[in-house]
Image (cartoon, rainbow, N blue to C red; front, top):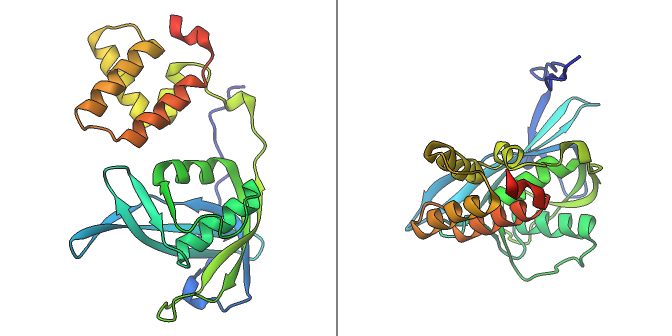
Amino acid sequence: MLDFGLTEEVNREDYNTKFLNELSPGENITGEIVVGEFQKVPMGKREVADFYIIITNHQNRTKWVCEFTTPYYPESDNIYGESGGLFYTFIDSLNHVVNKTPLNWQENYSTNFNKFRKTVNESLSSITAKAVPPVNSDAKTVNIQVTDALVKSPSEDHKPTTIYDLAQEDPIILMAYSKLRNKGDRITVKNITFELRSSLDDGVITKNAFKTALDELNQLEPSVDHQ
């Protein structure tokens, strides 16, 4: 029997949707975590990133919708967490729980959003977070501090083994892969890298996206270079 990746349909229309402004300091939320896509929102002369993290508790059928608004830097595709802010508290405590770094490890945080989203969605099953008072007295909601996280066990079955597999997971590599196919060129790591560098030079992709794609290509078995 072939596995088409079908999952059991879950009716979540009857889930109770709640928001951060309904949390009081000291309360805890726990459940499956998903980071959504971000939108660029104009704010004065700059743009900010607006995105949601949804924490779903299937036992009490509650969805916590946590909205984050952070400074955004288009030249690097990075979002920025300022000390004491909502995203800073979240990423700092998540890093502490998962990677055992000290709390308040960095004064501020800058992270590539796509890498952050992919890592959370693919590597974490669930988290527990505690509502803590905001440092900024003008803030309308509490901050959320991660106190526990369940990391998924790595699965060798789903690890990309060919450039084609990797292209299905990374749109940047897929773009380079498609260009080579259209030109009739061999699909090799060397040729993919050349296409990525051309896209970087033309301003189509950012330096961060280029570096992330190279890191992923370097994790493939050397034999894929001879396809």
